[in-house]
Length: 338
Length: 127
Image (cartoon, rainbow over all chains, first blue to last red):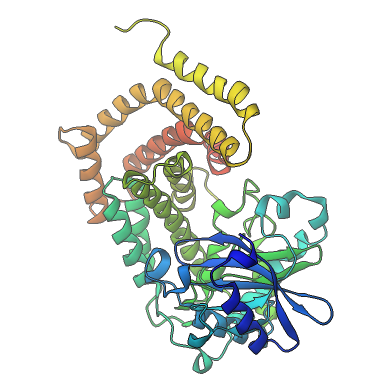
């Protein structure tokens, strides 16, 4: 869809002229992706000199989030605020240029810099271009997480508070809605309930989806931490466990951190950047919960398929929940001791 | 008894047709979905080959473990309920053995190249 035919192109032009100094208009407006809860658009702000490459994150159709990740999503104005706070705390993020206002007429959303880089895991893990970056990534991820967890809670916008017990309940409900027996999931839920850190455990800002796809990588390392939609207040170890889930290693099973690094490097980066002492047992707890979360999400694809979303891809993702079951058993009942 | 070719042979030849004849003529999304479709047929083929015997064995183990009769679905639901209530858990070698068997069967059908499955097989042979 070209800028000239887009129904909100004129409104966006006005907003960009008002909000970004030197901007004269917009060009090359192009939809990148659209989930149930957010749209992402690429465009350039034209200026007297070089154009400024930008990204627009917008609620679907411009209206407020009502479905999909809506129940747990933070909202676009909140996301923009978090990116600004994270940037000030030294986390690599795309600078936010403009938060859309009601009278801009574009809907809820914000505009940020469009940073070049790679988010596709298989390329990051295999392409020669990233060979020098790969050994550094685990430590850099630890540093980024430490900085974002340290952000002063008093400065944060209102966020969902979700300790371990809350996360377990939420996913147990989703699993029960699917109404298909998964004894391995039951075992994992039981283990999680028995081993959950107390609700009072250090509660900080948590990114909530810190993994491949949301990490923009360049040949020198992490360029930006993206998609703050699932940010909440929780146990900081949640972010460290989630990036170690085997589903994000893409076959590189011996590099637990995103398929590119070791836990030791992640933890060392975290502690060196002032994140405090890492508790490996709690990280493992969150790795178990993260693995189970992805398994339950695969079963929700089955529900979507049965409810009428009849794509072959959607259907077959249901047959990937078993991947998480073997990972859960390897974590909870390993066949080889030690 | 049904006539030949067998269901396994039919599914196999359709997957082969999609991969080697249909897919090369498709582009973009259609080509991607054709590959996913062929992979789905591979799952069906492996299930036809593996599931009948594995399900019967699973049923037998569940009857022993739960000391009752019932359909495979009923017994799986009962097992889930007992695990949820904490009546049986990781301390039971029979349960752990059963869970490993059903899980390895699922992976042998669903995703036999998955890293965690391949590694579990290696670890099992060393155990």
